[in-house]
Image (tube, rainbow, N blue to C red):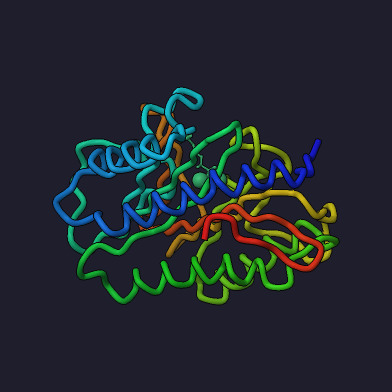
Length: 248
Ligand code: MF3
Ligand code: CO
Ligand code: CO
């Protein structure tokens, strides 16, 4: 079942999403080489709780932290640890916050210090994939047009589009229907309705689209070839005449 949110629910979504956006801005102002990924998690926990919200990731399916912090070859779901962030790294920070029963979810990939031209381009194209996906997006558009736009842009740069993880609906739960893949055939899938709230989150690899799941920690997803990966995510409201990006 795909929920269409009422105006009251959308107002609450806007508030949670605003907190997520502010938290990511705060991380962006403070993240630097020499910090550990655990330090980043601490920033996220403190900021979200100071807003009277709850970090939804903490305890979600047993996840042990408030943020997913994914460095270089880690695609998503990096568990904050004593890994030091180094000059030249790209670090994706993905957070979900819940307030008044509704969730916001967004991710940014931060450039740390002197980042190679190659990695900068990957991060830039990953962000562009999101904006290509929302071009012309509105009620009535087929769902898989989103993935088609992401895939077309990423592959035109020779990058790999992660298949094993997808975007999703969001609301009272962090993950709701529908699944929102980053690949797909134009003109297919259900037609979006006004009032749906979905997370569009391209995960783009410099090399192969194939990924590995860490069996020991149960979470960390890495690229199969060890090349870097970037992630960019926003929570988006579908409207009759376009979209509203709730986390931007
Ligand atoms: N924020 C992630 C997403 O974009 C999910 C977080 S997984 C968790 O869907 F385990 F950290 F909660
Ligand atoms: Co997320
Ligand atoms: Co998400």
